[in-house]
Length: 326
Ligand SMILES: [Zn+2]
Image (cartoon, rainbow, N blue to C red; front, side, top):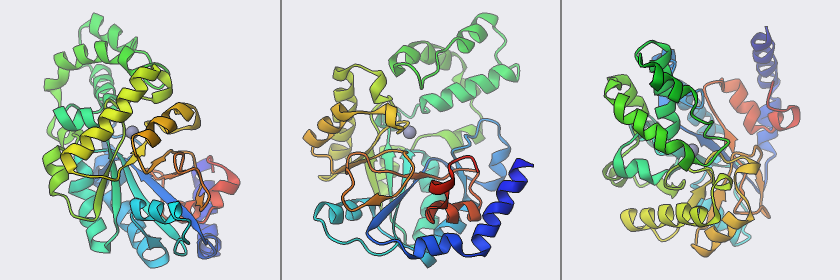
């Protein structure tokens, strides 16, 4: 029922052109979209596919909408304009992806190329280095295997159930036990899990088109405010340094893991500035006027729940007015 009311509401908003009117009047504001993984429409049947993914079908529709109604810019160019205090083009929008899934290059890059839309991909560099799945996907797979009876050892099941929520604690407190469990069960990864959850390699990143830019997302996808200051500094400096060195970039952007207000602080912003990072993005919803803090830029997270109507409403600022739940 709730979903029906929600869809009907957004269809009405779209039909009445309210969202498009909201977009049409945007001047000197940058909207940034945050994607994660991209999968085929039929892949959403897998329970381990994160709701933060988008399907190729939805992504194509969304990019087509952006091409027709907005002005896509690379985040780096947009930030450079904001830094110089220069005006932004009307209806400016930048596309970003967090984490560094191989599926970004396999499924999203051809669509970006088709519409000539630039994008920035933020890499959690440890997984790009060693090919290990991001910790949240390892947890999801292990939980799926446990629930479907594939993990039969009661002690392992208990260890898995007792893993602290990685969003609430230091990731280093989770990694030790998680790595042990992963070492024991990762041979169960099937072809679909490998296809959809694998991180890209540096080789893949180097081969991607010139309209794809890479930024840093820490090394171990560590939520910065949960770890010590020494570790925050290390996570930022090492991930930024690695991308500079391997991809030969001077200018670099950063995305805070988890990205909510409580997940980073002034300390991290100072480290980023000192490391020469141009700007950093969050997942705090909203758009960015010219005088925004460039080290806490707002983004709009787009996921499986975004029909094209919801997507339009999001970019038309309608969802800012009515909140996340409708
Ligand atoms: Zn992330």
